[in-house]
Image (tube, rainbow, N blue to C red):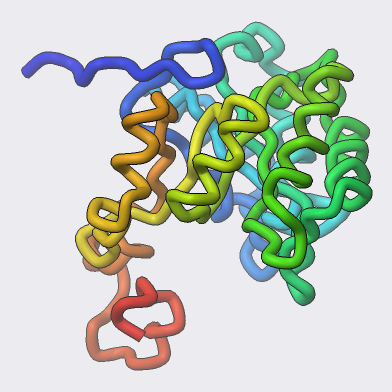
Length: 234
């Protein structure tokens, strides 16, 4: 069986499977850095070179950015192999912060932790669309940061088809992150996938195994685990 065709994201070819980093730095069960770094190295060796992390995957003192810096300080030769997508401008309790001021502060903090000299951020996106701020305003703020060389590209996370169109009209969108699995196929029918295809925007589909439900990892008899289930099952 032949290999799946590569997709180009942020100007670089990426494999069909990406590497999500939430599970490596979650505060209640963080993975020790040497173990996490080995997992990242193995993922890259297996062709998963689109890495997705976030400032809120962990704590301000230890999140995806700190771990990624640790990795590339050990393996600087891998920096050009990886397309790095980082989410920010999000507060765990308050939700998305899509104002230009909050976006700039988030990016400034990101590049302070992970300087471009170690590994540039290929795609930066607000972790969710802020309903209080016009998407054009948020994307314009990110576009200015691209022009300044702080980040290389702009992404979207959990945006509807109309929002994707509005955002792409302001600045080219490098990728759109959406949940997609057998439990959550709605993006195939609500215009999101069609819009991305029309505009030539790659899709980064997260939780393809339904948050572990399609792997047998979660016991079906344990009702308490429903909090981890895809929304359609809750």
